[in-house]
Length: 220
View (cartoon, helix red, strand yellow):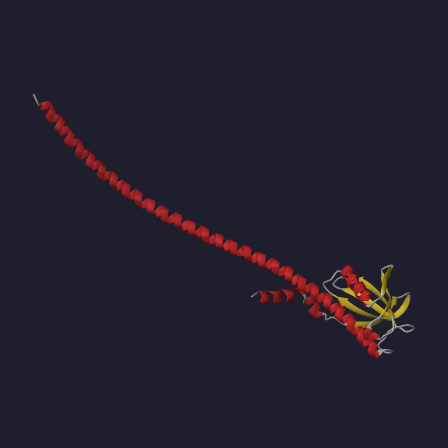
């Protein structure tokens, strides 16, 4: 049941992602101090600051010395084994859009900037790196949202169960009160009849007393 609910929540939260799959594109961008070839990927459901933080961490994982200049990240002397043994420089910029965060990355291979036409194999590797990066962040964010929404759903479900239980208890109490009222009403009717019978007994007893008093007065 919970798995089904989680799937529904995931579908709702990631509708935009499903409509626009994660893709890596190529473009000339003003980056690294001039217009250079760059790779662009969109990250969904994640804040721009978190994208910057994670990309900065990834560049450090490549052994790069990371710095920031006017919002542009620079990874100096990185070693990405998928792109070869030589050190490269990485330039990156994050742009916060309405429904997505764009990560723009340019790779300086040392005298040449990475392009799909000039370094086909290396470009495919870089494309995979950016795709996997965006996919991981997006999926982790949505997974966390699903968990949080599932907790909220579980809480509401628990509250609903408590209300149902409370309703059952109240109905049981009403039923008990109704049964008690019925018993009391029956007891009241019986009491009335008992009073009538007792009144008759009193009247009979009064006649007996009156007759005896009369006899008592007649004694001389």
